[in-house]
Amino acid sequence: MIDDSVGTDEVTVDLVVDGRPVHVTVDADLTLLDVLREELGLTAVRAGCRNGDCGTCTAMVDDRCVKTCLMLAARVDGGRVDTIAGLADDDGVLSPVQRAFMEQYAFQCGFCLPGMLLASTDLLKRNPDPSTEAVRDALSGNLCRCTGYTNAVRAVKRAVEMIGQPPR
Image (cartoon, rainbow, N blue to C red):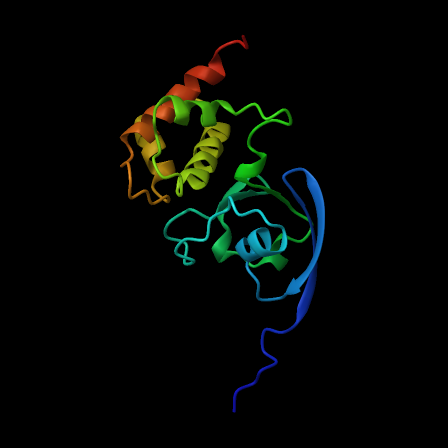
């Protein structure tokens, strides 16, 4: 006999998403990806493979780059989530990583872009001057079928230069 009650428990999750306090009640088995997209309307967090291989669902959870399709929303209760939507500043000025990806033509269709940008941002927070190999390693969890990774690596290296320059 099939037990239809499995997975129907609800949980309340309090978190801060892109600087905004959020309170949601969701099914206990709902992923963070589904909460971000379906409950909060943050569709820039992409739903790709849903098994952690492509990286399109990447977000920062408490300053750690994670694949939201693999994380239950309940595990983030009390935490902070930063998505691609919060990467630019409050005035809409793009981050150095975002500007570098545009300048270096490091994307085409844009589907992989949120994951690539967040993985790059995470890398530069941990290592402000990474080697080419470290950049490749940081981007390895993101699948891009349009461009390859040469321009993305170049963009991260350019972001290092931009971050090191005084503001204009």
